Image (cartoon, rainbow, N blue to C red; front, side):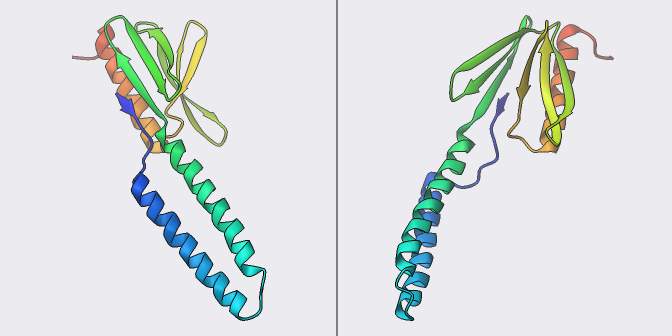
Length: 146
């Protein structure tokens, strides 16, 4: 499974959005300067830079992803970017939904180690993922009802 946050804006779309917002702010600042507010263009430039940086940082946060690989022996979670990997024995891993921080956390637990996965997913998506992982693990371990 490949988990990625929902992101509908492309890099090109982000650039276009920033250009439109900057243009609107500068037009408004120009009108303000025309009516006597000489500091409006300066504040508009500072605001435009801050908004562009904030949008870029938020957009880059959408590059996070997690790859979950399940085979007969192990369940492996690889976090990208960063190349962090954690491997659990498939037979012993438990899938837990626990409250924490005002939301439910999806945890994989085994042998005293825990790993939160899908933190960037919506609440319903985490619940659905937990059910799917429980079914896959039960099928793998021969615990499912037939």
